[in-house]
Length: 294
Image 1 (tube, rainbow, N blue to C red):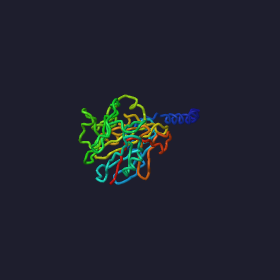
Image 2: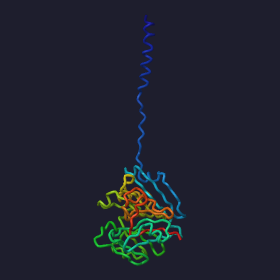
Image 3: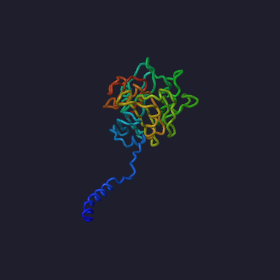
Image 4: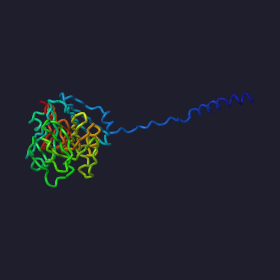
């Protein structure tokens, strides 16, 4: 009888043992996903890339989670070491000049829009000097942080981004050509703290230009005012410019003015002036930064 009882209980004991093994807790620590920095997101992204010429590379990428937002970014990388490259600035003193028109005027390979202008009459509203001649001084009452940086070209064609001197822009005599704008985004390899005003803190289309330690110029156009592309604050833009390797960088005119243009391709970003996410919404401006290969 005892042997029979033992045989009857054996299957239950085996099942209990198996059940116990199956619920043994897994003490393996969970894998924690560390969020990527902006620099890592930009570096690890798969960019559409085309070598436009010996000195110019064009890149484009649409992000669906950069700064927790949709971002559409066009980059022009310019090798300033190329002696055949010249940076020119076509302009108008009244009326309007599209970036594409300014580029065609000087037979440029690539171009971006320049600085602020009078939206009613045209012409620059900030300090602008071309080939040693002062074309325009900054209008009285103009917001200071929007013209605290200067894109300068010396007589030997070297490019620099300058912080506004205490003595004013006219004191920067070494700049043969000088287009002012702002705010300053990166200075001495550090992002600049931005003034907390809506122009800076709201997301908009943006255009920026920066210089790297190895003498490359980085022009960035950020699309905005669309569900596909939200635009950036100037703080976000400064973060991007620094992440791209810029040791100095400055904001240019943005909004509907933000335009990137390439020869044989036309406008390659998505300007918002026509309120459509296409390449047709280019706006007339006053100044253009053109990259010419001689």
